[in-house]
Image (tube, rainbow, N blue to C red; front, side, top):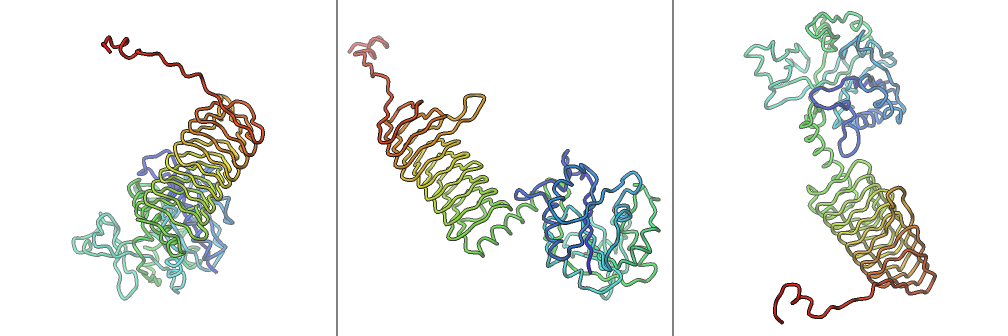
Length: 427
């Protein structure tokens, strides 16, 4: 049986942020969540070690069936210190870092299937500068050399430590009590266990892993690179499931969005926390926390959170927020907020639901087969019943009964020859 321990207690000073490093997001999801989800695909025995911003990080971790351990950084700082406070429950212990969001179940499985006292992940880099080197002979780890301690010959080694380890339980039980904080940082290092095991001639196998999957995130530049990779994975997954994505390198789809049926996403679109069903999202549109079904959105439309759009056509420069649309056409240049609009209704250009009075939000309800003329202002709270026509340019602040025409216009005044008088020109 396998136990996975995820080390996620640190602040991550190189991120230059007040937020805990593991809470920074890739494609909308905290990086720690990716690691937990991949771990749970391998085993039900997962421990997550936390400390910095414990309340915030534990709120995320509590959503998963894992054990939370709070590291005592004053008593046991460092990666080895973290393990001192975790109960070792299984015969094999896989140690992961909380800043490796690109790690995959498949790559982790490669380590867990090898029988050795210790299995160590390594990467072969063209440019290993900045990494500790790993000397390997016949697949066994002979020596780990920090770059600052490496000789000229050792600096030529291309294999580096990828930071993920598999230990037999008895190895950790033997060596963790022997760890010392007698070093410049006054921390307990997990790598010291490797060094002691090497000296005692334990079997330490090196497994070469995929550089992309094991890439750690230590800075916001690393975060940007990792997010680009994750976004590509997300889009490739949906492409394989039959979603059409035009120029996918220009499209952003977050980790929480889903697609069903025949869907097409055009260039420049952004889709977050939404479900798209049998719909077309046209160029440069933004869909946020909404459900779109059998509809066409855009180009250049914005669907804001808590919207449900079904059997509708939403055109360019239309903004929808907290609104249910069923069989509606809104071609262009309109704002529909806090509304319910039923089938057969047409919203003319420049129409607005005036839903906010500076203190509170109010609802607009529009029935079936309503024609809303261009440049109409609907002052909520208001109900427009079925089969109503509203003349262009109207300001409507009363409920309109079924089958009515609503028209609100100021009289047109024409002053003859005003242009010539104003500019002092002869006619």
